Each structure stands twice: as C-alpha cells, then as structure tokens.
Length: 223
Length: 223
DNA sequence: GTCTATACTGGGATAGAC
DNA sequence: GTCTATCCCAGTATAGAC
Image (cartoon, rainbow over all chains, first blue to last red; front, side, top):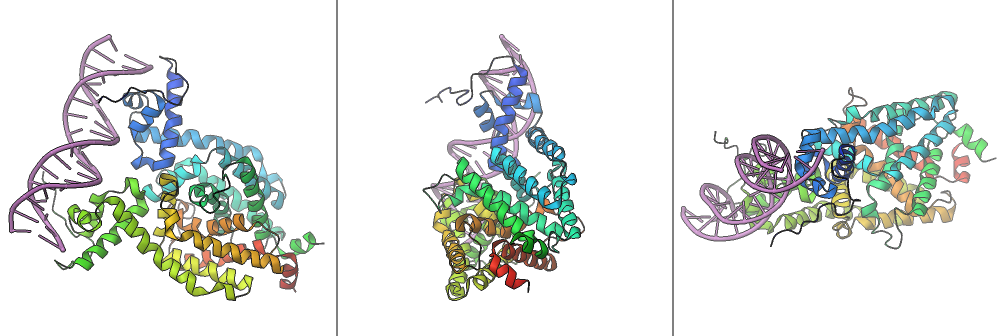
C-alpha cells in the first residue's frame, strides 16, 4: 500500500549536505515544471520529487513557490540577455544583424525550449506580470532598432517595426512551442532532432529575410 | 466568515430549467477556463461559478471534466473547419488562395483567441493527445497544398511546404497568444483593439506574402 | 434539472526533530 | 541542511433531496 520510496529517480545521486547542488537541482526541476504548467498550476510536490529532496527544501531555499518562480526566471533569462548584448548587432549592417540575431535566438530556443513556454504561461495566466522583469523586452527593442535602421537605409521595405518584430519572434518560437501538436502532422519525423531543427532554422531565416527585404535589395539579390 | 453567495455574477440571468441554455453557458465558461489553464489545471469550480450553476451540473451534463473538455473542443473547432471548407481555396490561384486563407484565419483568431490558447496547452500539457481529433490538422494540409501548387507554378519560391506552413501559422497566432506580454512593449496601445488587430492583419499578410513569393513574381510585382 | 452536502484526494506551507 | 509529520484549503466527483 505504502508508496515506494523512489527519491532521486532521474538525476544523478546528489551529495547530502551540498547546498549549491541542491539549489541548482531544485531550479532545474522547477524550470521544467513551470514550463509545463506555469506558476499557478505547477506543483511543488512534483518539483521536489523530481529533484530528490522534500518539499520543505524548496521553502527553505526559496521561501515560497513564487520565490522559486522568480529565481527560475532570473536564471533562465540572464544567459539569454548576456548573449544578446555580446552580439553587438548595432555594429553590423541591418541585414546581417537581423540574420545573425535570428540565428542566435533560434539556437537559444533549440538549446532550451522552456523559455518560450514559461513566457507563454506568463502571458496567459499572469497577464505578463513577471514578463516585465525578465529583461526579455529589451530583446524586442533591439530587434526593432535593427528593423528601423534597415528601413531608413532602404534595404528593408517600409514595414511596421513593432508588428514585424512580433511576427519574426512568432515565426521563431511557434515551431518549438507547438511541436507536440505538430508532430501529428508528420509522425515519421522527429521534430526536435538536430536535422529538423536545422531545417527549421534554414526555412525560418529564409522566410523572414525574404519577408522584410526591400524592392531595391530584392532586385539586387536576383541578379 | 461565510463566503458571500455570488452565483451568476457576470452572465445574464439564466432561466431555471432551461437545459440547452445551461449546457451552452457551461460550455462558454469552460472554453474560457480551458483556454487559460488547459485541461489539467482548469477548475470545474471556476467554470460553475462563472456559469452560475453548481459543479454538479457539469457532471450531470458532461459526465467528467474530460468529457466537458472534449465537448468544448468539438464546438470550438467545428466552426473553424466548416469555414475552411466553404472557402474553396483549391479553386483559386495560389497567391490569392494563400492571402484569402490567411485573412480568414486571422479573422477567426480575432473573433476567438481561445482556440490557439487551448491548442497550446494541448501541446504542452497533453502532448497533443486531443489535437489529433480537432480536425485542425486538415487546415495544415490545406495550407501545404496551396504552397505546393504555388511552388509548382513558380509564383512561390522553392520553399519547404510543411515548415513554411508552420511558420505562417506561427506568424498569425503569436500576436494573439502573447499579447498580454507584448502589451508591456507598448503600454499606450490596446493590443486587441480593432485598429491594432487590423494593423497586425495587414503586416502579417505583407510579411508572409513577401516571404513566400518567387523571384519571377517578385520582379513582376515591382514593375 | 438543479441544488446542498459531503467523501476523498492533492497540494502549499510550516513546525520541529535530527 | 535535511527530513517527517501535519495543518488546512482547494478541487474532483458523487449521493440524495427537492
């Protein structure tokens, strides 16, 4: 009758009394759980079970479920933001900047699809309450700046920078957000295999670049 | 101490003993709730409270939460599918077909953003278990067929039909799925106002059509 | 057909032992 | 720092009155 004591089922055996490792393990499991269910519906019990510690540890380190959530957000997005700053896209011509930015963003998505899932739940459940603090909006402003430069220089057509930025990001993330649905369209393919992800990258960049290019550039392109 | 007895708070007063109205009211509220939280995290209590009936009614009419979920899916997507069949896009030249299809799809999204949210939860929570049965996949196959025709005729560039179809849908729905986050980018604008939705439609169609057009067509376009 | 009452479970959070 | 035990509310589902 009693539940079998499984404990740390999937993770490597944790050292006892290793605070840093415990915290990291909790954060890892929490990121998964929040990505799947969002802040509200995520269960601390599931996080604890996956981590191999008890629920009490979560409250010891992070005080509350919300505290844990914020810690997950910070850790998850700090890397992304650092990357975007290091790219120095302002120094490149608009077309190169856009392509490089999109390429890099897609690589992040592929590495960790949890980010966009968390953000989606954020939008639907919490009206973007925590979204403001992710620093994610700065990625958008960067993208918009590139588009505006490109329009001014004539290499992009006269598009709406904000709405186009949104559409570009949508193109990048939808594949990853919906792949569990989309796999039913092509049961033979592994949607998250490196090959398919590479194909998605290729097609996404192609459709985005063709979608924003101005006529002058389009003609030059077809010579 | 006792909870105030709110009952049918927001909806118009329901007639007592009106089965059809009760069922419809439950379905309406359930659609909202499932869109916000997905099958697992949706609360029958919230649905009942919003409807103005008791939880018991839900089980009386739909047997279980899952039964209710399936009923919601069926009702929500039957309209969409009917529409797509009536459009008769096979009869139009590819470019017209694509533009008309996208336009119509965006109109559906604007009318009821719940659909794409439900599908997202479907993907993340349930691995698309119910997605198969929505008939939504047929929309994709229709879109793919249009793209293939366009490639064959040379009015679209030689793109990957499946991945491009995914990217097109992503462009259409991302705006609606993420608008609660995106509003923080432009706090002055009402993202779901008719004007903004119209602008999104315009920009989405522009970037999609430019993104798929072949070179021949692109040149003709710029004469 | 609709309600009230309730059985039962799951899950957030805390106290206190070790 | 980590665990066990527990409190208590929330939520699914059902029984039975009207």
